[in-house]
Amino acid sequence: MNRALLFQIALGICVVTFASVLALLPRLRRAEKMQARLALLRGMAPASRRLAAPLAQRIAFAVGQAILGCGIVKGETRAELQRTVTTAGFRGPRAVAVFIGAKVLLMGGLPLVTLLVSGGLSPMLRNFLVAGAAIAGLVLPDMVLRKMRDANARQVERGLADALDLMVICAEAGLPLEAAIERVANEMIEANRALASEFANVSTDLRILSDRREALQKMGERTGLESLRRLGGTLAQTLQYGTPLSQALRTLSTELRHETLMRFEARAARLPALLTLPTIAFILPCIFLIVGGPAVLRVLDIAARP
Image 1 (cartoon, rainbow, N blue to C red):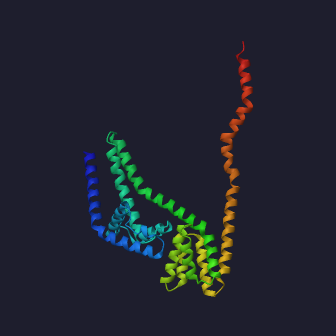
Image 2: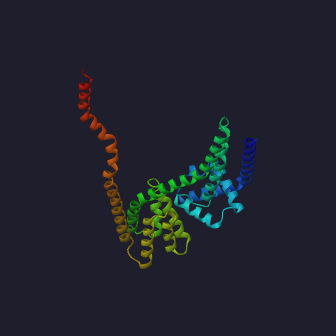
Image 3: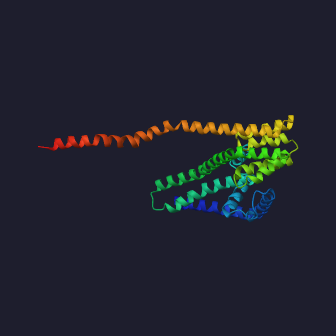
């Protein structure tokens, strides 16, 4: 009886979700076309990628948009989610809806799948697995998003020094700041897509916002990286006081490379401490076996004699 009730509840959730998806599909297609056109105009996506998003992403967006439209997610929580998905490399208003929709679908879909495949188990174990699947569906998107955020931050920080060198070349060639940032964004697409996307957003903000210093300060707020905050502050001071742009960028690039070298040296200095436990666990037993093995065999041979 309990199993039949749970199945009816899960079926009702699926029906409501499917109806919400059907209601939001026309708006979803229009939004996808607009986002694809904007990405194509920015030069960040080739023409072959201007098609619609995958079906799973569209369904997650539709579910998340329905939840956001109901007002369940408050303004502060939504702003925090927007900052989190932005630091992970996802831009635009669709990211929060897709994230919320993925959490809801996983939280409802994983228990349903677990309930269907665990029919031969005891009721207690089945309920435990269903509850564990619901918790996993709720926590798994957060874990994946955290991993993607860390990977995006590492990729941006890895290519920042090279991007600054390109900006130095552009500045010495006579390009203004906006044109230099846009040129670096176009040149870094293949080498470092995360950094190219960030520079493209900065270029868009510089064209749209009236205060260019505000656009430069947003550079570090989006990713949460101290190096980008320093870059934004350096560029803002250059615009305010009229200092040479190439000299400031060259100095900042040298500092970033020096800090990267110091991090590598710190990681290398940790290797002896990290290798101590594997040495004790795998190498010393072999040495003891080689050194003391013949003596032990000799003692056993003498003890076995009559």
